[in-house]
Length: 362
Image (cartoon, rainbow, N blue to C red):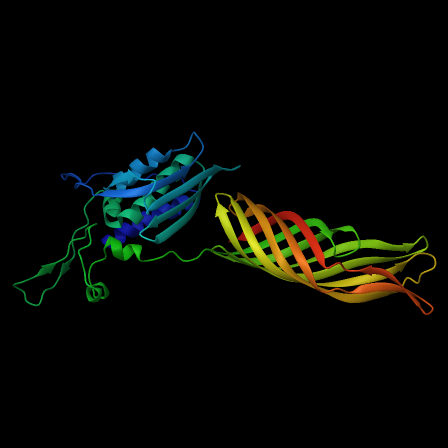
């Protein structure tokens, strides 16, 4: 019955996360007063539009469901952090609950922000006291399971409780009924997603002068980590040697980025390190110059930083600024008889800025 109660509580939260307006009712067991709750000190960090549930409403929901007194303490180590933001189709909740060093993170969407407020209280209550929360959601006590004893005359029983008894390390590894401490030791798996993106932007230092370009990317998100492969093309710009001669240089290539993202609400800031390989193509320009083309390889590595703004659960806008230090700097020149006239050589540093939409799957 304990497992059924917990599964039921989690199912309600998952239903809300899929966009449904689930309603959770808190009922005291018939014919029984709720037990005197123990106080839990918690740091409560809550941000929501004025029309949505406030921090006190969420605290009251946690108390009611977990049957514990929640004392708001700015210095507490246990933390409930939540932010509700409005978007075009409804509301989005980012919730983080840290109980005893075990972190639970949820991102939920619903049309009504009141639904997300109740969901935040339910998820936090499960983290504080899962057994009592299951009893509150089901509206009845969970019967204590019976464990057969060594003899028929001396049966042993175990009672589901929110107060785990003191146990030795050997006892913790042995069989027995699940307790809140056992549940808290189970960490949530990392969030995984495939991302696809397209962008337009500007580069400085890859080809002569400032050049426009296009870029596409495919990546894999795993929690705060990002691994992304990208490719792009920078349109040609001309390096003028004199009035009658010049070299137009364009570039196409691909690269790889490894990022760690800091997130708050709908905004994420990935900090990256990456590498880029670019094939530069130079073509002669001018009446006194042959239109033949030559190619050379440019290589660079360096840091980058981005800003992502999620507009929908699977759609957002991203800007990426990358600085590259050239590891290989090709140069191009015009050959006139025995004389070589320098036309363009890649600078030691380059800068690219791209902006565009990205899609998150699933």
